[in-house]
Length: 164
Length: 169
Image (cartoon, rainbow over all chains, first blue to last red; front, side):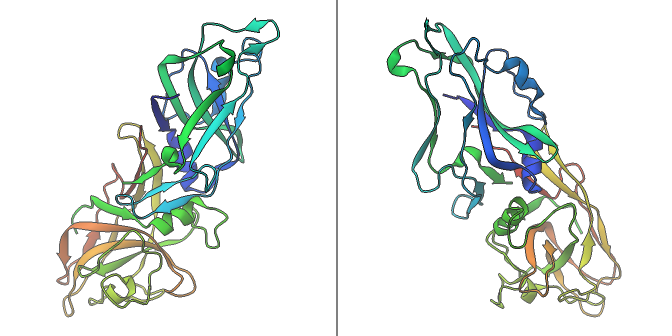
């Protein structure tokens, strides 16, 4: 869904220090007014922007099962990346039945950003990376597209770290 | 020595930083790290893992370690100086993580026996050089030839000596 993505700087720092816990990583979806701040170090901003179950039936943060960190010496000067679903070529983060409601479908609604969430010993919610599209992604009321999925290529380079 | 701008991480070393569950994890802030000098004959590759890789060639830091007058190399040698990490911070302007190490001086370097210094390795010593981990290579802009004067490692405290970019896609 995304057109732009990036790490949050403080999360990368904690990654390099081996402190970031991604064992229970999740993906959150955000509405309009999202502005990426690469220096953001906590998830407080989510509370005002995250979709809510009230207006977005069936919305819940999706689990993102990560594999171990992997270093590929063959790519340029070397990239570190964390593959998602090791051994599987591609990966989707699914939000099943997003927008489905017993009384109908939410219409003309858009998702503007997705934020990957990890945790620290001292902080339960830490933004790790974000994908965003300033135009938003329209959530259709077509039953065939109830599920919103985020597609990643299987090599997991979506979370690459480039050794500068 | 000239200011440093060319640097490279060791891939295995960086992995050991990230993976706190690693058999030999590296904590860039809490661990005692060291700087070792290697001659210009040393050829760094990002897959370097240990200070002594047993190759005894240009890829082997222990084989290429300096031996100029007043530099004592080898495991726990006095020539290997403690590396003081002054900061590891995200630079929003350049969109990268920057590791800054305090400047270091090797006094009265050479004079009788001289070397051409090509690089400084950031390492974490283990029980000997075969399990001492390479973390990164700080290459010099120009080879520094010892002559009995001081050899000063002048780290760029603005951009750091080892960096990680955050690729935006």
